Image (cartoon, rainbow, N blue to C red; front, side, top):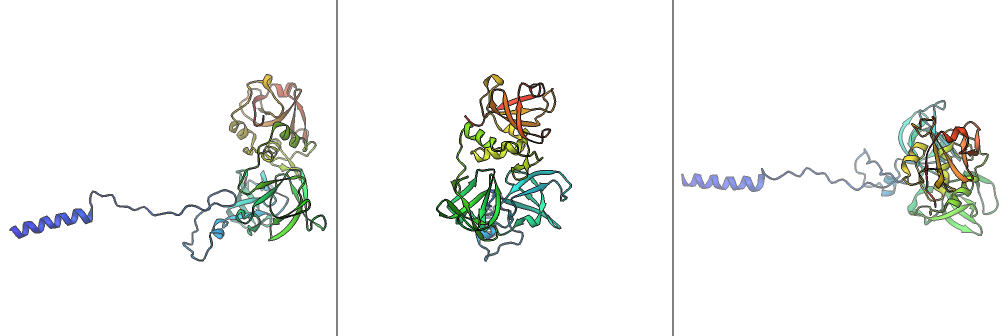
Length: 331
């Protein structure tokens, strides 16, 4: 009896210590930190499991491609007759989400997702691998040319404002820049700003912002457009001009209005460079249009009715009744 009692006591202690009925079982699986892609998004883990021979760089850029044309349309559906939702520009990274026949669904730098033709992208990301460069050249002119040589040679590519090209070398007044396809070209330093890799474009002033906006005068209107190459819409004008001057805004007018938190309460506090947001109706129930105030009751906007970037007046009967609010991003 005594031996039985001792046996039961020992068995009980064993179960408490080793089985741990009151101890939570650790089922946590350690997940590696996500690698950051060229577009700043966390890369999706591979569905093929661990590959010991795959380098970190290859994993990081696995679902990333670069744009091959000056400007490419991003459509709502994989059909050129569907709505153009935005555009992507040369050498810009896109995240591949889905593939369908000759189309790929992508996420663009401006946050939009949509479809583009697969022939306009290259999965070779050597031209945007930040770890291989020190600086990048950001195009600040409406359009600019990339040449095969420094000051000579043929034109390899026309590029639009906002295009970012990573610098390999400098000769006289030209940068040698990396291009898709693992080749290089040369672009004039004039008309670009040099920005360190990993750093944002420096924020400028309202005066510089307006100078950029005025470069687009008479540019054709294009729904969903973001460049002078084909045209742009009202929010595309604000988006690209603010970005070049160091302020990243959402792509659409209503999102821009909600995103910016500062600005005068009424037109008495207006300053050149302020953004004017308009509604499509007089009850001001939405935000459908945006312009940039330049002074003396005038603003610049990409007008669908005029078919181009032009001037407007806040005292006109139409716009005066539809002014939703004012926002300020530059002093």
